[in-house]
Amino acid sequence: MASASPRRRELVALLRLPFEVVPSHYQEPSSPTSPVSLPRFVVELATAKAHEVAHRIEEGLVLGADTEVSLEGDVGLPLGKPANPQEATSMLHALSGRTHYVYTGLALVPVVDGSPQEPLQEVVCTRVRFRELSDDMIAAYIATSEPFDKAGAYGAQGYAAPYIEAIDGDFFNVVGLPLCTLGHMLERLGVAWWRGTPQT
Ligand SMILES: Cc1cn([C@H]2C[C@H](O)[C@@H](COP(=O)(O)OP(=O)(O)OP(=O)(O)O)O2)c(=O)[nH]c1=O
Image (cartoon, rainbow, N blue to C red; front, side, top):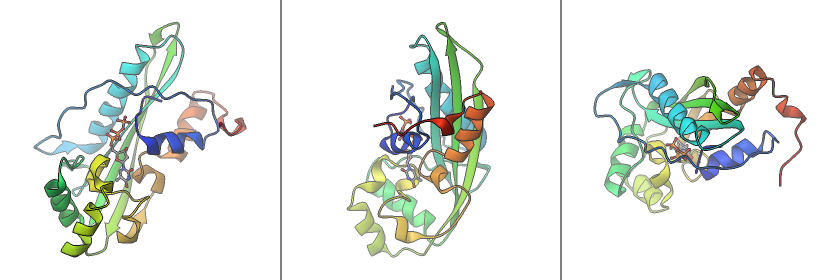
């Protein structure tokens, strides 16, 4: 798995397949300043992350993923990860009382005899609605430090959980790895992942 994300590591383990974490050295570009196609954007980043690792191994299947949050839907500005409390505050203000979209791109790159093969790619979108957040709620949440390594400045699996009014789609996609879609992709590559045993 070409990811340094502790959430993705925990989620991928639920497939019960043997895997190794090899964080990608791909340098993500800074967040775009004009609207982009979110589905294309996340798939390109996921593929770039996977490719960088695929060029460093001899054999295997490399998984790359990228998650972005946007208020606009398919064409919009990804919010990115907040660099400081001010950015986290303005992202959470923007999400307060509104519906937003979380996109995760997935790329699986098979490597055979040291050669990366054509990637298999997917994108998953989940709609998330936040309740209205007061200034005090936002400040208290930022004080937990949870927003800083997360797209959109929140963790649905963490202290932001009580802020979520509704979710439409795959919850695991919001946390960074849509497992059901990943299972289908593995099946397309002939991997009977459900026969695996829990890895320690
Ligand atoms: C919206 C949301 C994002 N996130 C996280 C998932 C991702 O780790 C992160 C989005 O950043 P990414 O750039 O997708 O991933 P990453 O930099 O953490 O890890 P890597 O590139 O090595 O794979 O935001 C949550 O954990 N919970 C949430 O609710």
